[in-house]
Length: 376
Ligand SMILES: *Cc1c(COP(=O)(O)O)cnc(C)c1O
Image 1 (tube, rainbow, N blue to C red):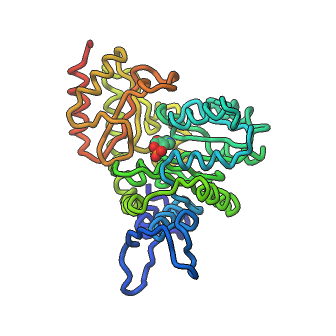
Image 2 (spheres, rainbow, N blue to C red):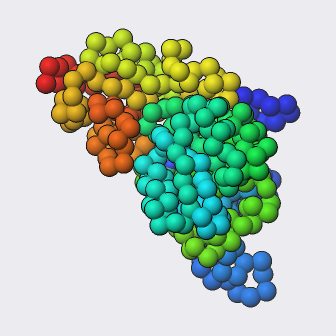
Image 3 (cartoon, protein in one colour):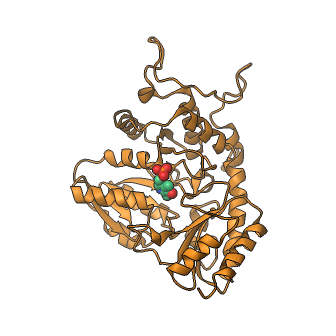
């Protein structure tokens, strides 16, 4: 994870130092929580929806430094997604993944049905098929690793092909975080985050972000936020930055746990398939090794039996939370095909967000729930 680029501080260090006012005597160690919508005339700030607040800007400065661009905080991940899509002209074509966050897929489908844009859904693990759909498109939306199938798309190849075709690229970096993947450095125009997940890390807030290294594009996105109005709360931004400081620590533990559980589940007779890019047998393993600095803390596995058995398994857990979201310090899981619009997801697939607990406690809980529901 401590991928050291020449002369740069390691990521774990930068997560601590990013956006800090080092060496200002007497200043508070952390940017205080500023709750202000309105500012007196004559200064740089005027109204928070336009320029933000010192608290949002502290978060944005840190995330921007870690992703390598200018960051903008939004009220939620979906607010950030909407702002990015709103930059498209009416009727423009978006190439999007077949497997991606369910809310993004739903928004794209509804916008396609209403004529706001045209969405072409492709298998983004298939580089050739994706590149073939690019001519005439305005935007390529990528999500890797994808939710919930953990597919890895070839970022360097797809981003280069999109650039050559004049297609704007947005990468949802929620699962990897900048600790493990830096899409802007690989050629992406925009990085999108659900800050709700790993970046903030404690399941206690909703927030989103867009990051771009292109000043003109960043200004257009800021303008979308200004007029769309999906701005973050002050407390949310404060907590998100506090969470971001421990991202490398949390992820290091969660990722080690995920690798351990993936190996354990792959050997388990009640589990028919494990999807985790860290497994050498995983179809995305080679790509993940090439473009990521680690394999992350998300994994999916399919149980023997049917959907009812899988639901019983989810309810039989005593430690691991049966819950939808992800990226918290607590482990949680759910059966994803239970959601509408997830017809492509195998019925017994369980998506697990691996947390920071002791790995043996997690294994024991999975094992007891698998044993308790065997043959059901
Ligand atoms: C949760 C999530 C989103 C949406 O973010 P919200 O903060 O819930 O609005 C988008 N993409 C991915 C990959 C997610 O996991």
